[in-house]
Length: 634
Ligand code: GAL
Image 1 (cartoon, rainbow, N blue to C red):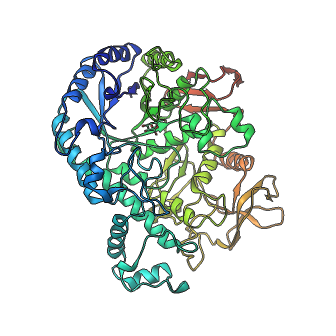
Image 2 (spheres, helix red, strand yellow):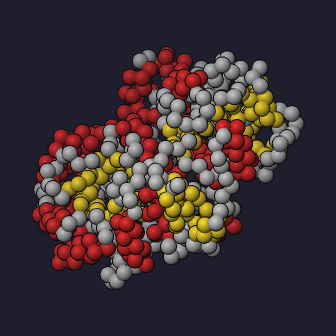
Image 3 (cartoon, protein in one colour):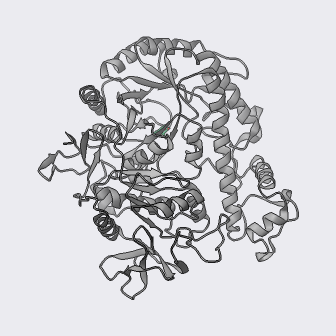
């Protein structure tokens, strides 16, 4: 696999006489790719049906002529002002019922079929015009689905679409009433057009109602993306990509990914730490200028799978961002470390965001590779260094992992509707499990919930999976490694009801969750062998062997040699103990990495990433502060 670097560029932001120099400097920096176009609709079609492609034609010529490969974005995340005049009801509506107005971006409703058709139209025109252009080597469809909380919209378009979707799924109001348990609180409906969106109710709406609305809304993202994918495929052989985000679970990325060729994501490690991740003040201070040591890796592993093996980073943080509560600069070395970490996790390409810092508008405080005055910003030299290094290092594939984690978006929606404990969230639980695997030095693959074959893996974790899919249940029945299911797994029906007999339904095992507790952060349930459960604890009954107990004698893990159920949410040290003990049974070598150090093996090399502010020596190898080190695998 050929590793390459790129950058995001906005020719429409700069005088045309600057383009050639910019392109030459990109090439001199060792960049291969340039992404353009994704916010340019007002310059492509200034008034309805009147196109001005000349500037884009010339930009493509200049950039492509300089030797860069172009990723051309469809501009559908930024409909121009006239679009809103043409389709006044295309604006998304927030949960409080307020329209989300023009004046920033992503002001569209995924359910609005008129806007969807406008997007098909512009994608088709772009496909026809540029589909065979030799410089266009990839396409990006739209930009960051769900950015600024835009998956869910409580609009008229959404209500009508939802009612149709319900009618197709349930066929009769009676069937829906039964499936949702609407006899409770007299919530029964006589017709589908009585069913409103699940917002502005007096207290919480029925959970299956919320889950159905999430499923419907996710389907709209999938359909919105597919319309553009289908039309571009007719005109271009170049790969189709979307740039996903970190910690976004509002739509099913597995399903969007099925219609695309490559999954990319936008990696802002320092912004995420400040804005989007839990952690003690001490932890956040320790990693303030480096980011959480597992956040990037988790998403690389997730999106590598969503991309069916093909992963890119479409936007890589180069310096301070503008959008987090606090926006410190990365430590020197991090712009290089993050790129190498992506490559070690299988990324083909890493593009920095953006080429030159814009001196105007919303993101003027967001760094680029160049300063607004065109002088180099600190990350430029790091990008140059990575470009030199990738040229020297042999191509290497992604090593197969021995550990895997199942990740399911529907479960995230289910637990959002029914958290039961204030801090129960799917991403958080999955990320906790992932962190334990990574701290043990394991390579990890992330698997979709309908995975049918686990035979490549020795250890599989499936926490928080609302209901095991039939293929996964069957695969677990055949599994020869050790699978640890739970907590909170396979204890619901597809409609978020409690099944009888009680779940989980694990092949060959008699285990039931008979009672569930959630606990505030200060509480803990100690285990006999040391360690604690926090947040969540399920009381287990059944004839299956009890493999670990709480201090008060309740089952903590039950199951067999190959399949087990974990009754609680282990704190980090306990997760580490469970992973290392389970791996020891499997004969799988683990380690306990020092805080902030992570390793990752490719086919040919072991990579070490030091997320701390001091050099670290581990097993005879010294890794510089905020540094990366690699060695051939022997
Ligand atoms: C991303 C987005 C970019 C830019 C960037 C700033 O979310 O795709 O357009 O806004 O963040 O960090």
